[in-house]
Length: 314
Image 1 (cartoon, rainbow, N blue to C red):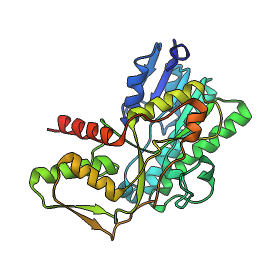
Image 2 (image 1 turned 45 degrees about the horizontal axis):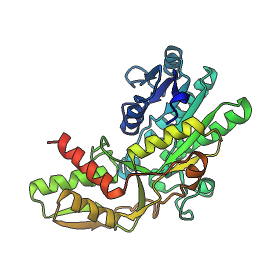
Image 3 (image 1 turned 120 degrees about the horizontal axis):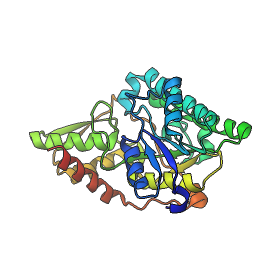
Image 4 (image 1 turned 135 degrees about the vertical axis):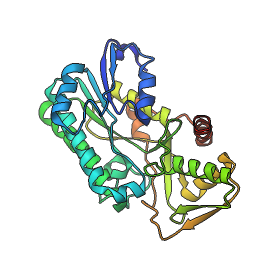
């Protein structure tokens, strides 16, 4: 990181107590900042304009890193599409506007791979974002986050406001959300297989048929990429953050079974949706624009995640 860039800066990290936010804050702690402000939803509800204004008036940040989001897996998105749309849209659109009004020096928004069209050329290039409708099970969430990209460009074009957007692929790692009602695929499978192993269960049931593919990025790598972009990226074009490695859910399940020591069978429930058929990002722009490449090999990152969960959930 560029220590000089961060020297004496005041930085607001929304979602700073969350998964990605926690990793970002840990890295920021190693820099020479004046202050890191982590707003809590109990004190500053980011869906409320007055709460945002109050936060910015108190914090007086040079930089806003907007990582707060309402997130969840396929089941949560299918059950609460309105909630996922409203919360994410209202947080982002108002926070960016009020940050511009307050004279914030730089605004960094974090989008989602769920914004990409359901069917798009593989690997996903940033230009493909506008070529179709997202996969239906998480379209409200994906579209709410996609609006921030449009808003950022509009505010930069009209007001010369320094606002950028990053699109990370699915994240994983220590500190992830392991709540089975709202977690994503890796933490959900880790928990279910460890619990099945503990109970001596003969099988674990998985949604879909295992053919869908995903790409995963270790959370510490994502945090590094976000801070690198904050330092040097100034364009309105969104930027993918990923590992560039694609894996099928079937192969992922096999790896997690091996990592957790679960030796039972896997039962595929093909009455349930697979989600988007394939996800793999073109990550060349991040490397070209600010030198980002992931450094954590997947099996090593997965082992660290399993170890963390076992050590904290005994």
